[in-house]
Image (cartoon, rainbow, N blue to C red; front, top):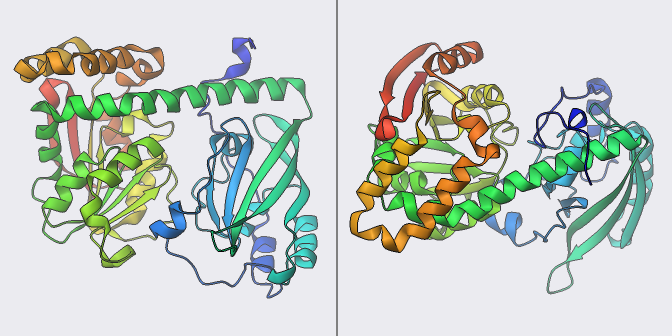
Length: 415
């Protein structure tokens, strides 16, 4: 389907201002003792058992999300997030009540839920419902919800898989939504396709490990580090080897799977705060599931320039850092020369080059695609300084403008 370019905006990662909700009414309902799921014990966001054993494969094109047995949000897909102006982002681990209030018919849904979901033994196996939502980007939409119970191998009820069929009021809104979804899925698949080649190639160079070493240098032992956009886990693994405790966050499943395999030794022997590594699938721009004032260091290795809203990411980094904590950022400069960078990679590979030629060519070609190239020359040092100051960081503690074969900058800032 071809869509007029005037409809498509910037890309599928477009985000409007978040819709208003009645916060007083939200609190009132969340304190109602009859609300299903309102008063269950909070589960640990990084508990691998909850987080991944219950996860069901999503159909990319069908808006879907998953709840656990206590109506906590476990996961969602891009089709769902996009349709509802990304209001679900950052709410992993929260009660579904935390999101329902964005719907036009929230009060009706809550009244009906209190009737149907009082007794767990009598929950419907399949539940049908309509959501009414006024999208800031796509206009009015009616979402026809089908929720199906999920059971484990013993037959125990463990949660819900929910799919919604989207019925946009205006044809223009529908066309725009599906074009945005196409763009967003294409970008995600490019990163997935890029993952294995990227990992093999960069780890075989000197340039990339040197960049990581500069980024993690002189972090005190036993520091708690948030590795944002952790990717395939190269910086995470080095931090763990230097006696740091790490929460690794990324939104790409393929990269997180590699990270878990690469760092599997650190994922055993306990859960959550008891072990040195925890892994969280999450968008870097909304970390609502993570408490404030937690970390000694927030690390962003070649991540900020790829984000739709980098300022939102830095604002969240500031929030989750302890007082005196430090954010560490690396990324390409406005005058980054791709030819110079890849020539450096090639010369460093030496005898390995022929065996890695396919990976080299793939990564190089992906970097040249418009969807990647548009962000490569996005920021200079002053742009980063301005954003850091705007979100509250006071002092620049370290600055280097010629890292990564002279094609990247590094900047540290204190809270």
